[in-house]
Length: 257
Image (cartoon, rainbow, N blue to C red):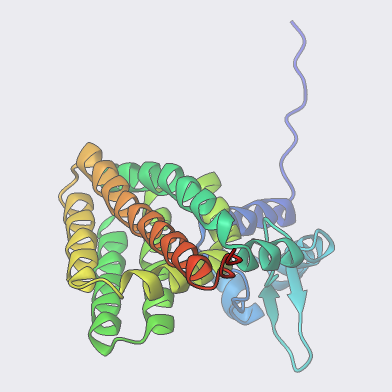
């Protein structure tokens, strides 16, 4: 019987893989600064030359960048799953907002399901924090701040799901998500009691995740997005009726015989 030599992985390669895993799982976020070289080497229990080599590899792959004034950062636009021009186009065209809601329904429903099954105590603490921030913004009644807090709450659910593809897909449309929520809230808040309904839905979603009720969490995410979608459809119907009435009012009078 012949035996093959077992090659020991190079230390720099091991560190490279560890850092990549931290970026994928969200422990290192786009735009985040890495700890100083000395502290990072101590954290991994390696020499600074080995760490430096790993950082150089990740920089060559476009995952890390160095900034003027010092410091190494995770590439800021790492999660741009859609190009900025496309994001801008989608944000400008109202007819695609319903497409985004359908996409959110699929992604956020499964995120809520897995968050209920997999969230750690740290994840649950973050979800509670994001919900409290959302609640404070709703009381303040600033649609833009509410939209940011709303998007951050849903992103925290994706992080708690511990599925890197789900997480990075949702992160890739995060800015589009914020813009969409701003538009949605502006329309929904014209309806009486909409704020309290939305907060009740978010609370029910949070409770289902915290209590580990996976199917219920998915159902609560779906219920929330259906409410938003129905509100937008009703708004479109109302606007269509108003435009039709305006056209009738502005119609030219018939020629009198």
